[in-house]
Amino acid sequence: NAGVMQNPRHLVRRRGQEARLRCSPMKGHSHVYWYRQLPEEGLKFMVYLQKENIIDESGMPKERFSAEFPKEGPSILRIQQVVRGDSAAYFCASSPDEAPQHFGDGTRLSIL
Amino acid sequence: AQSVSQHNHHVILSEAASLELGCNYSYGGTVNLFWYVQYPGQHLQLLLKYFSGDPLVKGIKGFEAEFIKSKFSFNLRKPSVQWSDTAEYFCAVKSKAAGNKLTFGGGTRVLVKP
Image (cartoon, rainbow over all chains, first blue to last red; front, side, top):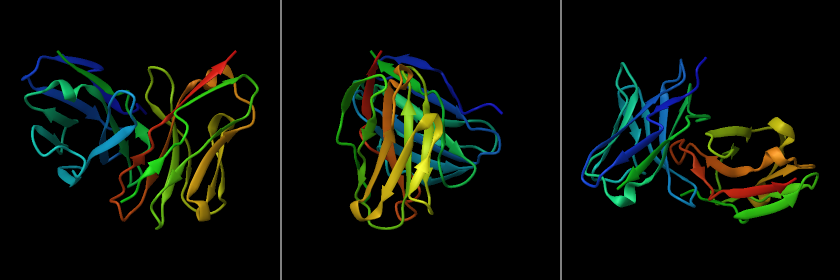
């Protein structure tokens, strides 16, 4: 049973470009969570999704950030018009119920 | 709102020493508590969790944690560390009232000298 798969592992973008981060949850898991880890800080919750629904997006910036978890395919975290402050590691976690437990390797986003 | 504090940001100790990492949370209702470990360059792995029952929880790799409700604490312990325990350790709390998302502490970086 493959773990949570995130890609790409590393993503470099220039200011103003778009970043798309993908997360394939573990098989059978219908709950997906996205967290952001800034340098020298802990993980901060961004958004919680179930299939086709956003359950809680209280940790996600109101502008430029969006997330989806379609019926088919991975969950996508999308950042439009990236800025230097978006540089961080973005982690996805999935679970079969309401307790997130399994994390992916993360995507390290660098903004030039 | 729930919050988590890990008071030690960095811990350095020698092999075979005992380790205790502090974790305090602020939410007064029913919570689930977790400790995660992140080895250098790797993803977070669950060390142990507390949902209910015995407040002394055994985890993987010889770790344990004790939930003390009156102190809002969930400290992590290991009697004798190894060099391979060098990692960053995160305490996290979850509650239904807060929407089931994990709230993490700032992490503690542990360096075990051989």
